[in-house]
Length: 293
Image 1 (cartoon, helix red, strand yellow):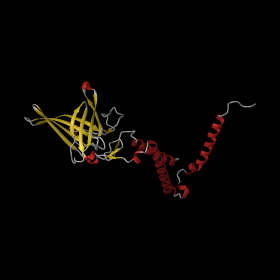
Image 2: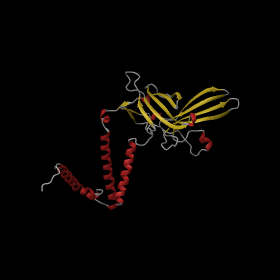
Image 3: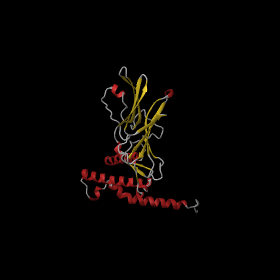
Image 4: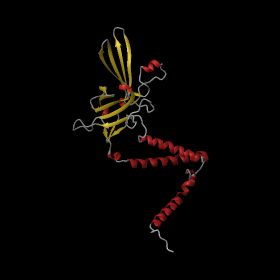
């Protein structure tokens, strides 16, 4: 009984892992392997923190907006910092953070007026509750700009926190990043187009946004085929783990290595009984319902 429970636990873990791989739960964006519309992208080289500053006059101060951007990994966060330092930065798990400050040149005082987690990947964040199937991100392929283009731009929508807006209503923040394939751009920084209607628009020209077409042999694998492959892998793991367990614990050999050997020995008999019952059921269903007396 204890051995059967251990196998059941293994199956539960594998099923949970498979469910997560199908997107049943929110998962962080894998920048090294993005598949969309028959194309594969690898933007892992962009896994770094970039700062974009915009300064405007706001008499008697100068207004500075700084965007800290990393589409692939959370921004650095010091959990041991004091509360004042934490309040001046976005919380842990933030991918894109907007910090607005006002500097008074006469007094030399700088005030932080807003800190907005525009995009996060923390699935347990209480402030993050987007309305798009509770996803962390959406990946799309935009239309081609030219006929000669292999594909259109890679568009990734990242969701952030809900912050108080008009009438104290929570408003979902998000970032739309349009990655444009440009082989000549080696180290081009992203360009912040606008931030309105709770959406940050970013355009990013880079050589890393040039995708490759997925071969037909891989595109042909449908959901049912993938499910069968998964079942086969689970069965193989079950046999390998079970055989290893029997060998290590019971020093079994030969057919005794087979986990739950009694069950597999009875499978042919159970299949035979099932076939007979189905045959009798179908055969009996053909009668008119009257019996001779």
